[in-house]
Length: 242
Image 1 (cartoon, rainbow, N blue to C red):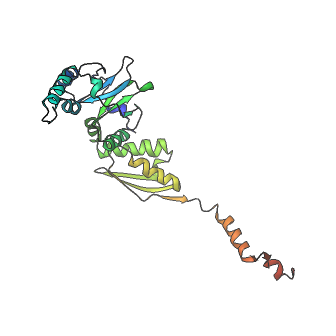
Image 2 (image 1 turned 60 degrees about the horizontal axis):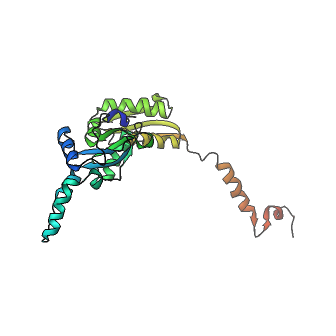
Image 3 (image 1 turned 90 degrees about the vertical axis):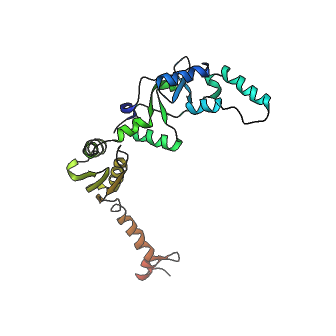
């Protein structure tokens, strides 16, 4: 599986929470980035500041109150990053699947995620463009990963028993496995492979788990026929009972 580490940017420009807002704006312009992780003296992520945050702060309230407008202008030069940064930061780990990072960005509607280690220390950043670049994979690359990683390594299934074909990101799975849960896991894991848009699986299984239950169900079904109203009719039919 492709991981966050393979696509992330390890060299990250950061800013401290007590830095002036104007300083953060200059860093963004110089580095050509639209957001900065905010880290404390220990290198731990405490927030994120973006262009949107800066723009929001720069806008003077639309008010007829001249005193309020004057106050807003006065606050801007002395503001610090901590005054406007977002403190709700979404982080991922280096070894997380790249598909997980993509899902988090889509769900939270953010452009980037911080990559963190122990104690939420900053280790990198992964952006939408990083994920998009990783998505530009060939069908051959996707097929090779499914065969080697999903079928062979993770599930431990003989690759010769599963036919895998990929066309424009659509994966077709054919073949047979031992148990139903293996077929379910195969489809689920294949769908999580980066670059897969859809999975069409007709994988069958030899044992769906009902064989072990049939004798027991049959036993109780038989007893229901011979026990009625608290009396064992099987005994009564043999001449016993009342």
